[in-house]
Length: 365
Ligand SMILES: *Cc1c(COP(=O)(O)O)cnc(C)c1O
Image (cartoon, rainbow, N blue to C red):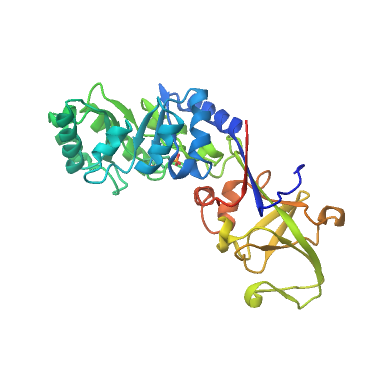
């Protein structure tokens, strides 16, 4: 909080690429998998694919996962030589677009497999793809039975399948029997595909020996999220969000603040108005329970979070720290992603992926 608040923007988002790289290295050590990939969907969880992917590449990451073709194209520009898998498969007829950018769809249905295999035959080039087997999410992928039945089908080779994967339902919940069940189901399918590389663990799964495979697939923890809720966060914070104080005022007991007068001062209070709101991606659902740090002091939100403004109760903050333009911290230090998510009735993942585009963005490395 040493720099002045930005001029021309409400808030400043600082993204620490050195911390991102350190987190990837840490996860690679913890996972004990032969290879650790990076999930960079949703614009690298809000941190920017164009900046995050090259930083991870420099650290040694060679495999990336995104959700959509549009994201994959940005990733392809950023890391021209990387293996890039597209988790949401591919829409009918879009195989040529995937092939043109050297992208690998994650195939999850008989139709997808057949269409990719046909494209391979038509081009006379077997381009790789992953096969997704659903071990419990019931969302994407072949069922375990379908996966087992397909194992001896020549279409697997025709479709260039080079990776077998599944996704964990609740790896962040300690000792969840569902995770063991999924790991066992995945092992059963894996045994039917000898020699094929396999990938199961997300960030939380990285910490579970039963989920170790050939390729770890962390996302959230790379960006500083806690992969083991309830325990100390082993990851370094990547994202820091600050906004400037626009005005400070004193109100008397009984005064109200914000739209629809949803807050009433219980006594004499000092309020500060911050230049940041829900149009910046800060959830309106943090109304009444969000908090910010001013000069290290926790200050509760009062009134509704509005489009461009948030009001803080700064009564406990020394007056010297309340000058016009002084920064308030909304994410960072004691306010980690998981706390911010909880304060908004959501999870840190949604806080990250909602990070707005109108902040001043500063990358550090
Ligand atoms: C998002 C996603 C991941 C990464 O999960 P995190 O919990 O963010 O580590 C891994 N695999 C798949 C299939 C995903 O959709």
